[in-house]
Amino acid sequence: MAFERLLLLAFSIIITAISMSASQADAADPIRCTLIIDEKTGETIYRQGNCDQGFYPQSTFKLPLAMMGYDSGILVDEHNPLWTYDPKLKRSPREQKDTDPTIWERDSIVWFSQALTRKLGKGAFADYVKRFGYGNQDISGGPGNTDGLTESWLMSSLKISAEDQVRFLRRFRAGRLPISDRARQMTEAIVPHFQAAGGWDIQGKTGAGWLRNTAGKTNYERPLGWFVGWAMKGDRRFIFARLYIANHRYGDNPISFETRDSLIADFPMLVESR
Image (tube, rainbow, N blue to C red):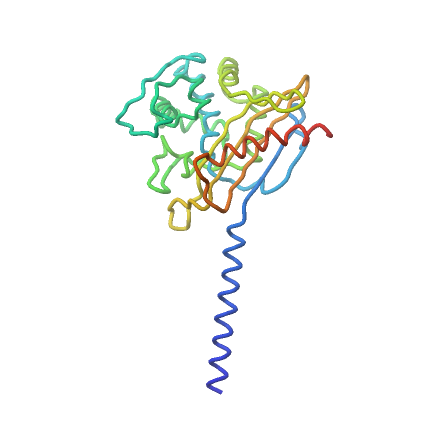
């Protein structure tokens, strides 16, 4: 009987281990979403994947930050202000340059975003996020010792789903956000353009980072990439968001470049038959 009990215990342990391994494998599956809506009607044109779960916005948050910057008067036009890079920041070579609003959006300069939110201050920053209804509106910071004012959108407390990304951008494009018309126009002017097949003009912003593990540490096996924006061809207007969270490390190029380029390549096929 004792031997049989040992066999049953060993079998139980093996089954549990297999079950846990399967669960971990499932947890590491890639997460994908592509969502495209009609800008005028809000009708869903294409939807596939996990589009209602919130994740860190990363540098896609430069879109609402530009709206805040122009509405508050901190940002002036496409090339003003030009802020000087401070070597004390010790940023990557890519960010070691003087930056204006166009360079900021085009090259995704993080220190420029952080200088902008410091100039806004905690009160104004929090007020804009609340009035925008952006994501979960949580700018408290915290995970990974991140600061709410300068890092809440960077693998921290602020999260947004692809569904909320497109809804937010639709309100922006329709002039239904609490910002001036000029702030809307200037923001649109600095968002990078990309050309897709069939004459589609795509404007959008990438965002890249990683998920955190249960201990709050960066999980480099789970890189996160966004590409969000709008597309135009003639009188057709669409809003889109694509999210890709991989289950393996990436090399030199951020995952957001693949996310962006794949959306640009796929876009005509996804909407032309609609």
